[in-house]
Length: 215
Ligand code: G3P
Image (cartoon, rainbow, N blue to C red; front, top):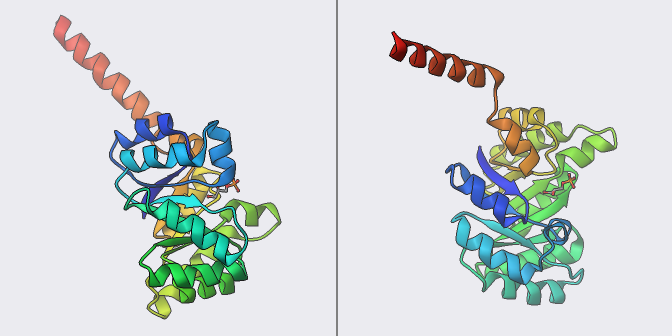
C-alpha cells in the first residue's frame, strides 16, 4: 500500500517528504481553505515536492465547467490528478478526460456501485471515504475491502485510495483490506511511526553506550 498525505499544508508535506515514504498527496477545497492559500498557489508547490500523483479538486458541478477546470489543473504539472465528485456530470467529465489522457480521482465514493461506475467511466483512482461512512454507522473499511475484491475479480486497473482516514486502526485495516493507497492526514501520520518500545529501546541503547564509554 502506498502512502499519500491528505493535506494542502506544504510545510507538513516537506517534513514528511524528506523521510521518503510519501508517494503522493490529496487535497480538497476544505483542505486548501485550511491552508490559508489558494489552489492556484498551493498545487504547483506540492507538485514540486512530491513526484507521485497530486489530487486537485474541481469546484464546478457541470461537465463543461469541470472539463475547463480539469484542463487548467492538468497543465500545472505532469503529476496533477484531477479530483472529480462521484455525480453523473462528474462521470461524464471523467470519460472525456480519460480520452485526453488526463488522470482523475473520483471522490466522495460511498458505495460499491459508485466505485464500479467511476472505474468503468475511466477513473484512474477512486476514493471511498472510510471515516465518513463510519460516522453514519456504516463499515468504511468493509467498503474498501469490497471495492478491492471487485476490482480484482474483474481485472479493473483503477487504484483504490482509502480516504477520510481518522485513526491508526483505519490505516492498519485498509492495508489488510488491500487498498492500493491510504491518504493520511498529518496528525495520523505523526502517530504511525511512533512506538513506545522504539523510544524506550533507543533510550536504553544510548544509555548503555554512554555507560560503556565511562568504564
Ligand atoms: O480525503 C478525503 C478526506 O479529506 C476527508 O476526510 O476526515 O473530512 O472525512 P474527512
